Structures are given as C-alpha cells and as structure tokens.
Length: 367
Image (cartoon, rainbow, N blue to C red):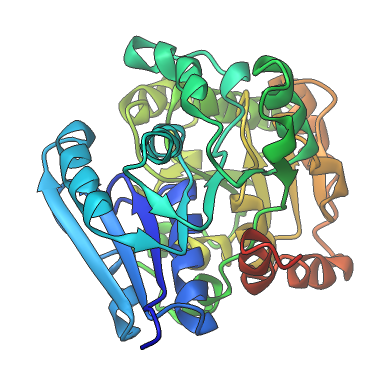
C-alpha cells in the first residue's frame, strides 16, 4: 500500500497579512500540484474569520483551528498534531513559527522530509517594542530547516551577517510570488461602497497596509502637504487599511488642514478595486521585507509607485521609483516625476516571472 503524502502549512491566525497570504498561496499551489494526498493548514489562534474557507474547495485540504485566544495557547495543539503525523513538507513564514518548527524537528517531535521557512521581514533592521525585542533571539532555534527563503539579496545579507554565517548554507533568495487568483478576483469584484465617495476629479494616491509605526503613515500625509504646497491640489491620498495609528493619522491630517483631501477606507479584504481607481502608489515605510503590495498595485493598473528605500531589489521593479531620501520632500519629488500618461510595457513580463507555481516549485527544490 502506498504511503499517503502529507504537507503542513502553518498560520498564526487567519487574519491575512503579507506572510499569511504567501502561505495561503503556497497551500493552493500544493493542492493543485497533485504532490500530496492531504494538506493540513493549521491555524494557531482566534476564531474562524472566513479568509481561508476557499481552500476547502480542494478535496485534499483540511483546515485545523485551535480557536485559542492567543498563539501561545495554540502551540500545544500544534505540538499534538506534530506528534501524531509524519509530513513530506512543512512550510511557515513568520519567525516564531519558523523557530518552533525547527526546534520541534531538532528534538524529534516534528518528522518531515522537507522543512522550509520563509523570512517575512528584515528582523535585525527593525526596532521592536515589548516582547518583539526578543525576536532576534529566536534565530538560535533555527538550523534544522532544509531551506530558508529570503525575499531579496539585501535580506539574505542582513540575516547571514547577524546570525554570524551559521545559517548561510540554508539561505536562498526567491522573489515573492504574486497571487494571480486574488488579482483576478479583485479585478472582477464590485467596488466596495466606501470607494464611491472618492473624488472622481482628483488624482488618487494609493497607500496600503497596516497603520503602524514602521510603515510611517504620517509621512504620507506630509508628502501630500508638500504636494499641495507646490500647487498640486488635485492630489488626493487614499489610506487602504487599518491599525493602531489610524486615529492618530486622521488627527494629523486634520491638523495639517488636509482632511478633505484624505480618505480612509478601513481594511479591505481585497484592495484591488481600490487600486484600480488610483493613478499612483505611495509607500512610506522605514523598513520592509519586500512590499508585495507593489505587485498588486502594478497588476491593477497603477502607473507608478514612489517609495522609500525600505527593501532590497526595488530598483529592478518596472515603474517603481525609489526616493533619494526617506523624506516627504524627496517622496513628493518622486511622485511628481511619475508619468501617468502611459503604462510601462515591462510590467506584464515582470509579473509573469513571479508566477506562484514557480515559487512552489522552488520551495520543493525544483528550481
């Protein structure tokens, strides 16, 4: 009797951030590949929100929710499932899950033929508060992976240097894939009601992500202030997302006299319909692993994106323009140089090269 082939994909919760979306996309590719009889998607905590429900269209995918209040509570459920099953592939994309799976394999609790970890950010380049300050220590548990994926050369070099080359033989660079299903769904979806309030006579600037310190949303307001100060009052800023700095950013826009030129859409499960209404994109982060939102913006028809120098490899992306400095003035300069009259024909070729099936083949060792 042929032994069943099984894969495991680890999620902290089913609230979709960039790392969780990549993991979901890889679970889809695993299901389509025919390489596995069963694909377990293990979600450590929180109630089921529906964002992973689409995976159940595949007969070989099973969702496992612990419904724990926090990830610590879900770890015990994870350890139980690891103790009962053997896997052919285990994949995760966040440092604490990467560390737990490596440590579990080290002590023999995780039994898998292939363990793949993806790095979600440049951990050593960021400043964390609270428990986040202990994140770099988790790298001491790394080492039992078969492959550690970095999103850019810059990320790989940082991780290699800060782990004193101990993991060098495991590190590889695989550019992030684009979720073509998500793009296609967004292009065909009706526009959310909140978008009907966007001014049709303005040039809309898309800013998308969690409103967090590291993403510096107030810098985006400063960029708009500079543009208006130069007479570009046709520019309107659209914040797509939510987060702890939402109220502070709204207050800052109000204090800057720009409230009528700024719209907050809140969190959108799929931001593609919003991107389709915008001419240009703006990213103001201090540091990123790699902003996958660029791929979605360009696939949606945005003409160009102005960004801080927050990640490696940005200069290689068609129609992405890196500011000379991480200042509002430099970003405003960059936005003003974007040509909104024609679309770069290299965008399609660039996006095709980031097909998610290619990424899955790479994590399986078939590059």
